[in-house]
Image 1 (cartoon, rainbow, N blue to C red):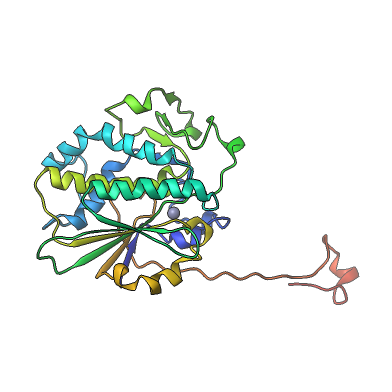
Image 2 (cartoon, helix red, strand yellow; image 1 turned 30 degrees about the vertical axis):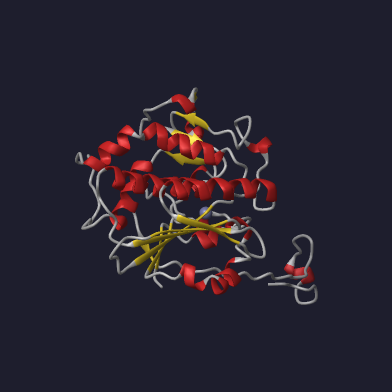
Length: 304
Ligand SMILES: [Zn+2]
């Protein structure tokens, strides 16, 4: 099954984040979601819409879908804020269960047949939206868990109480109050919260894309399946057995991984092929500090 993704997120799992695993550094952290739903929606719509091809150059032409999205900004962001407000550290089972309940409801509101797929760890949230006459099935993957949180490291009271800033925090952006009541958002504004970008906004963007299609009378041409992982940031230990166990429900002609950053061009981006990751733990023994090779060379153990 081919897989499309924004970047190789598998290489950026919990505890292994670093520049080498993030080809587009600086554009995504687990902490903020640039208000780029416009971008994410465009990318999703490319796949879901009939006859769509290529991507839009800015300024984007007016279309019924874009008009619907523009008029729905408040509702879309409020749905995201609601999801972000549920803590989602993988080991926090009670709150993971609250996420699962919320996600099932989110899918069912869009007409998905939704199910909770139990695993040896946190459950997968699964949904299917069938399209009459469709011969192709798309499987969208995203994850609803987030990295562990140390609130002391945050510039806001609570990582699970989303706030809105008028730009990037590191560039001195200030908070815009009243997030929940706003209906218009400037493109540069950002929602800050754990998992705002990684990886809850893609879930909400997919739902919003489907809403936009429905509202404008554009029917998908494919069956749509969704699987939402609850342990990605913990290394997805339950995923491999779950794939075998739920093979029928997870089968598809194409898989899209919604778990990547915005490209620096801010254009919708699809990356073909997602590689995995191989871990190696290597223990070496040697001196605790630098030793002069002229004095110690050849007889002190040298791990190099
Ligand atoms: Zn992720």
